[in-house]
Length: 261
Image (tube, rainbow, N blue to C red; front, side):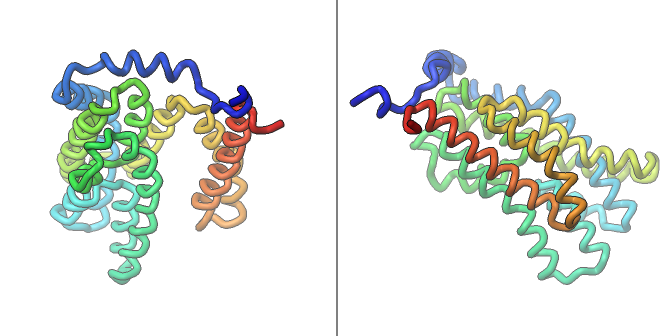
């Protein structure tokens, strides 16, 4: 086999394998490390977003139980906001279900990129329960940290990370509901958007440089598509920017592997 036919291997990946094997002593150690990593900025940012959502529910006349239940059962702030807005406007149950389902399609790509990185023995029916802990923050941090975590410890790290984020979402929602009216509406909306901003900043730290290209293209194309059609601008921007970044990445990888003459 010639050197041109051999796949390209990043030397840094070999170094990571050695360091990853010594990061955690046991699965329990990995779990509590995930708890500790979530206890800082990730939990605070998510808590602030849920406070904003709780305040939105109260100011729009929604019941406290209904508002907090969405955080417990859905645990997806964009979908919760859409559910709240459509319920306020009197939309039908079918329309609300379809809209919320569409917002949840992002979890498909998050699942297929994250869960295959778990150890083969952990990829079983037990993952159905772990899926509920999957959120933007937990996914972005896991994608970043998995590069230095041994395969057999990744699931426990993810569970610790996602569990704490999920558990603090309901208290944050309740607190926001109780504090509604004490802060200006602009602050409430700002709290809701802190979480997506934190996710964006976290994702830029993920090792593959193609992620930064996709984000950069999103910044450029987003305003353009918004002027064309604001209702579909977000979806169109993600599709176009992500596709362009994907093909750029594939071309560079193939060139490194010597496939392109």
